[in-house]
Length: 185
Image 1: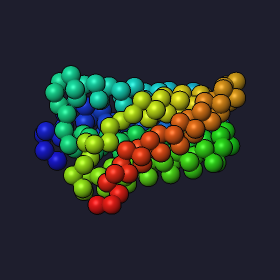
Image 2 (image 1 turned 45 degrees about the horizontal axis):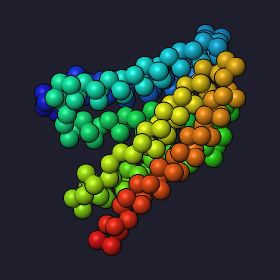
Image 3 (image 1 turned 135 degrees about the vertical axis):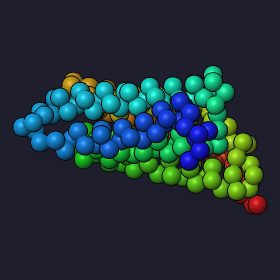
Image 4 (image 1 turned 180 degrees about the vertical axis):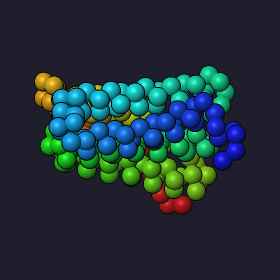
């Protein structure tokens, strides 16, 4: 890896990826050493920190003019690793719906595959991020944060999760519709 890949925005993205095993590992500490209440607080705080770095790395890349193809590749990897591991952990902890995790993870795989396919066609810039996708991300992050915290927030968290699932499906169809004209290539 060259120095141009070690920009502040890229380091923040790597930091976010590094938070994933820490975040998951919190729940494997024996309850005698760390009661569930504290695991929830720490995990929610780590998730919030990761969400902030997700915003910051993009902002800083634009502000410092350090946008790169490598950063554009790594950022969604970090996002998907964080979201997928969070959803799996929430299902494991029986705090959210299995179908919600499956729908969200399948959408992420589908859209990632679509973007890769579009890039091979040379049309990766033709599928812009839609408002519904940003809204989906906001509800998804809010839901995950509330469900991780889990102190009288499970009902609101799962309501946000259901909204995120609906927005997930809507955004997937939006992106597929945008790419439809390239399906015959």
